[in-house]
Length: 376
Image 1 (spheres, rainbow, N blue to C red):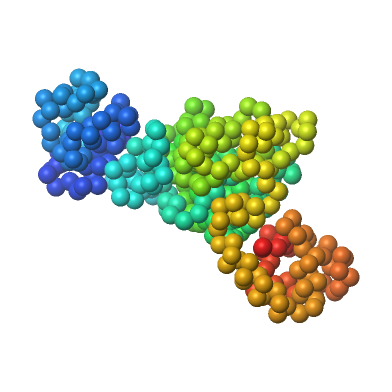
Image 2 (image 1 turned 180 degrees about the vertical axis):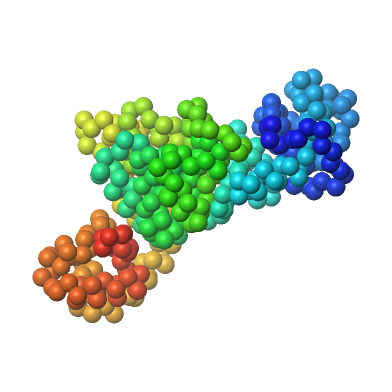
């Protein structure tokens, strides 16, 4: 990468840190992840590669003279101080395939990203779900993505998506509203907000999670980058939820990659004859898991089900009669405060009091704008 080096500027290479050697080796243009693995099979560390004689590099099976030339020339030009300055100017950090904080899930990929650039933080949560779907989603798809993501995030499950228009964006929004963590994997460099209309969402994701990319600073979005980033989305998640997808959709690529990685694929069923549902219904035909509530995903993954059940039982027993009425009127679909008031025939102030008590007890959740759902 051109930005990794600076011509005609000396740097005392003997004072480079282990991480600087790692980033150097993983930054070499023309040396992909497959060749990187071959090199590391012959050398104990990136530092050893940096100082290795040319003839030793030429003896590596599968490494060409052109590859050796790339390595040798890069050693002369590499300047970590210049590289760190570039990252700092973008308020960005970088981890490499050789770094200790590199996500292990990505390391297991057939074609792992050599580097991950990120703003905010890397996903470290124990449980993570990818939520993906159509860019030109319906109002129904939007609400489902938002609701499922808010519910999952509220249980401490991080939501992974691609920050694209449509389902991706609403998945991130729902996770933020649910008070959980969310991470966006981009098809351009991490300091660029794309699409630009997601600028507020982009900033919120960084504060409440992070944005990641395998592309170095200054890289603009390209159509070919998006299918590539999908393998990272599926790798970082325990499973993938597809909300709406056409028969030929990028979301199906993510689902296929998840299956190849041995991950669960969950699908929201759609109406027969609806173009936005063709991809989802086809996945169900092929054996994907049909889900109609976030609880089904939680149960399938075995996330704290017994603990949640015991918590619910103990709290429910001690609810007042009116609180039980309000709770029983709720479902796992969002219901507005005014609808609850009409259904129950109670004063709005009384319903609000009951909802506050249920919220405090962790039995219900507010999904923005006075919409409420059951938690479990």
